[in-house]
Every structure is written in structure tokens, then in C-alpha cells.
Image (tube, rainbow, N blue to C red; front, side, top):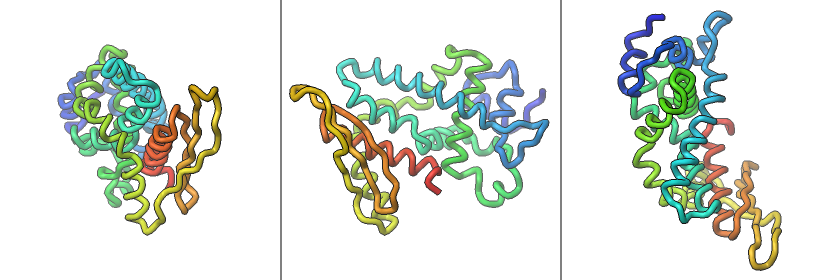
Length: 230
């Protein structure tokens, strides 16, 4: 299969030459232009999400060997959320290679966070299927690079970011509600629900209220930025 000039150029920016170029072509095919003979990238997106999750989780685990689960989880959420995937997609100009239907092109689909994030995950799945984890892992580590180093600071600010998101839309600041406490007194676990006045909410559990609030805030941010709240 012969790739378009844009898709061929994307291979170079990825640093992976596909043995099966049809995988990349499918990863770049948005549902708006899919057909019975031209499947969309949605199945690849599903797989790519899991590939990214594993690589990022391992990278964080190895990067900070003293961090506990409550510290690693919000950093992980920062790195795998749709907005971050979209930023990486912009970094390699993935949007230029996307195959979109006319309506998506007219509405600026090549710049949409949700669309770019989905496509980035699909491309990672295509790399994985073409060359295995040995091919996908170095690409993720290179493209996410400095973001892994910065994840700790970004995760710390999840509550601030969520409050700014809400205020920018005329909402009240988020509320943090303790929904459960479990475990012995010397090692309690707190479940905290982060809730906005539009009804959107996410719950997280950690060994301290502060960590649970940060994790819940980050989970809610990730969901809001994924486009599923639209």
C-alpha cells in the first residue's frame, strides 16, 4: 500500500518505518470518512490507549523508585490524558496527515484535542502491531520525554487547574467531598469525590485526603478534556 505524502512524512517524524503501511493509514482514518472498505481508527485507539498506559506506568515506576501509588497515580493521569496526547500529536504535526470527512475538515478537526488525542493513541497502536513493544516504547519515551520529568509538578497543581477550568466557564469552585474512609487508623484510605456544579464528578482513593483530592481533581480534568463531557 502506498501512503500519502503526509503520512510518509509522519513516519519520519515518528522515527518508525512501517512494514505494514496499511496500519498507519488506518490509524489516521477518522470515523467521519470511514466506510465498509475503509475502517476507522477507533479499534486502534482502544489498543493504543493500553499500550501508552503500560509504557508510561513503567516509565514512572522506574523514574522515581521512592514514590508510592498515591504519588504516581496523579502523575500518570497527567501523562496519559487526552490533552497530553493531543499536545504530542501537535508536536509531530500528526493533524496534517489525518484523513477526515469534509464536515470535520471544515470545523477545524485537525486542531481538536479529542480528535488529535484519539489519533495519537491509534498511531501508537499501529506502531505496536507493526513492530511490537520494542518499537512503541522508545517512541513514547522520546515523544513524552520532558513531560515525564515535569509530571510531578503538573500533578501537584491539579486542584488549581480544575478550579481555573471551572472559573473560566462561570462555575463555582470545585467541591471535594469525602465519601468513604477505610483501613486501620495507622494506615487509613480516603475516598474523595471532586464535583462541579454542572454535575460532573470523579472519585479517587489514596492514603491521605490531600492526595485523594489531587487524584480526583486530575481524574475529573482528564475526563473533561477528553471531550466526553460535551
